[in-house]
Length: 372
Image (cartoon, rainbow, N blue to C red; front, top):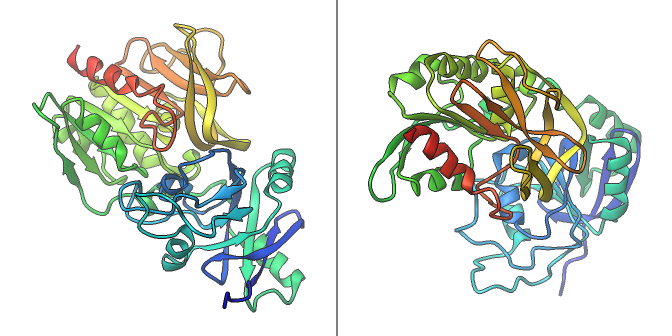
């Protein structure tokens, strides 16, 4: 006999509520409500450290169809604070599946909710912006005013320095595939498993280092290049990696940053950052390379962006810098290119986990920069 569904309630910061049933663990959770427009790749999304302290709303109506496996995770655990779906799969169907998504969420203590009108919820977040949220299930649904007060008291994403909560505790090395051509020092701000693999495939021996690593310690490895990874939180509060990036720029060592690393490079160059209304999260963002005119479909996960004018090179302490890429949906800065210093960055995820492979050539560009 199938167990009766456990009632669940989603409470937004602005007072709107959505009722459904528990999905995953029963209990309560808090975070920032954001939506992801990917049709697939839910396992990579859940295990992406960039989603730390976020409650992810999936716009795709069916989630969990292919179950879970041990090959697709991008880290050792699920990082999202909560999960919101409309119609979860009742039975996964894939030759790669080793279990169900529901069971995996339960085993890792991730509180979720199903049966929610995710279209209405997404439209609400698009109109009102990302905001604080709580999910409550089981015996926690009594006092709505009390639940609302707990959501209001939960910490906001603005001002949150989270990279140090997701970074590796100890350095480790991913060896090059084939001949070792380069040594890369990768600052782990929330790095995904697939990123060092892409670098290793270009002949890079990748030294993955904690987010607390100083610029001097980065350079002590005598790297051919430095990589700034993706990660969670407000870049305006993450000062240590900014100082490390400035040390790399001053040493004229090739530098490549993605996602959060793009924002860190922007700050190192003297630019500001700001919070987007609801961010970019999914695998279908059209980004144009302003130098070539080429448009790539890209994978995103960010709620903050670099504040830089699109017209003309910018004067910085490290020479002129141009906005190299722009999002065609909203003109958000999607990349920076230094015209004298050997550094560049993009706001999206070229490692395609999950997502399209349009931008994987950026790893080749980094290798060429190190070689040249």
